[in-house]
Image: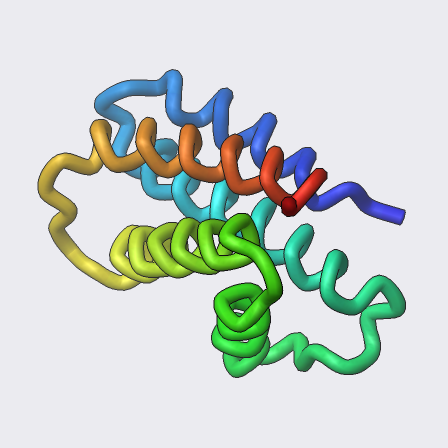
Length: 120
């Protein structure tokens, strides 16, 4: 079974290509999907109930937002933040501060994946 967190390794490689807009935009996207797919699997290990369509994104982050601990809410907030950056990186023609936000996205994703490993 694929370990979605491995996408963060690729994001970390891509973000090192400072000034390469395509690489930095891709780093944000890969960082987001490393977290989203890992969070989706955390909520639904069998991969059945959460849709694999656009609505699945909101379902995953809402589920964490309503979770029992502060860590769950932190995961939701980080995930939503990454989702906004991912949308911006994939749909906006211009992206001010792209290099800075790409590095930040990778850092946020690393913390989110750590939180997912033991949400307390």
